Image 1 (cartoon, rainbow, N blue to C red):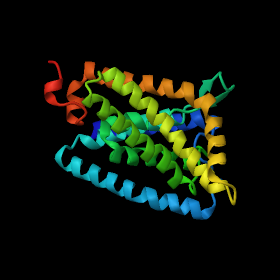
Image 2 (spheres, rainbow, N blue to C red; image 1 turned 60 degrees about the horizontal axis):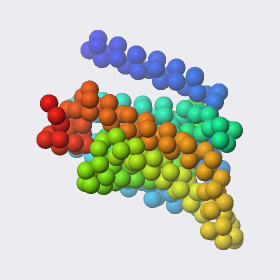
Image 3 (cartoon, rainbow, N blue to C red; image 1 turned 90 degrees about the vertical axis):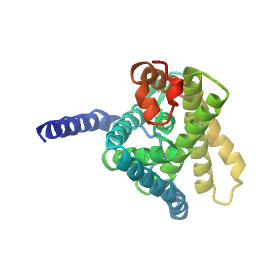
Length: 253
């Protein structure tokens, strides 16, 4: 009990420190409060809700079999929270942007649970960092949580089927997850704010505006994702087996 209490205090201190660190630098990566009309905000909530519900079901199911699974989910949620609210300078655009982290969590935890992880990170950012918003939470879960997680997971799995090594599969999965997130964000923004204007011209315009920041940042996220997967393979391959990233026979003892 004393050990658990100590761990809780350390976790609380870490979270408070991160909030203090990033509060003054809450650059908007996600769709901010009030950007989307109420009807579109509601639509994205309805789209995101089944994914979040299924992710929660998966967490309960896997935790019933493995008591250590919930701490792994909590650790990944903290990593995604830190990554997705950390401003990264992008010299090509003279601004800052943010990686997402959901490609990584999609690979390690599975896409459904990664949606829950992203939802928690986005909710905390909206409540405490003025980073995105509550009314646009559904849209941000859709782009970062659902699109990013499933793109990263499916890309990684597809490349592994074709015998790509872990670094290449992780890199391309992280890269595509980041780019897919901003592709989805562009579609959400264009749908919500276009009014009577045609969808495609506005969509292309928004998408092109993301290129100077997300082209280099996607490469960075690919490297981070690949680095995490390879590091786990070298240091804790048993965790990759446990999380169904690798089969037992793929791990070299």
